[in-house]
Image 1 (cartoon, rainbow, N blue to C red):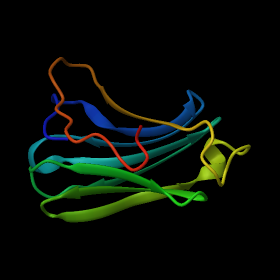
Image 2 (image 1 turned 180 degrees about the vertical axis):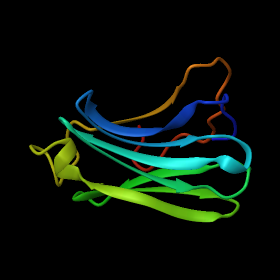
Image 3 (image 1 turned 120 degrees about the horizontal axis):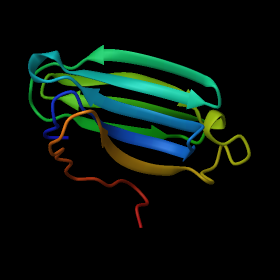
Length: 126
């Protein structure tokens, strides 16, 4: 992510539907940026927020070993592990293998503007 409108949340998501998704997003601007990992499984929601150093572009990543999704945010100031979530919370039927999970990028917020996302991709992207 290289730019986003003020008051926007720009990030990545791993999801099976509106009730089950893990989101990692960047919010804030200038030196007051934060990365937030939001985990939702049915009616359970948990969030963990960490500060991001610097004003340079942020790289957001998700990896999964079949049992757990791990989320990281990286800037010129270093890499920050923002947290993890059990793959079974997204899809108990298919975990520990990939089944019905989807991955995406998003920007949301009250204002208008443009978010700049570059190099969207990953392993096994068809």
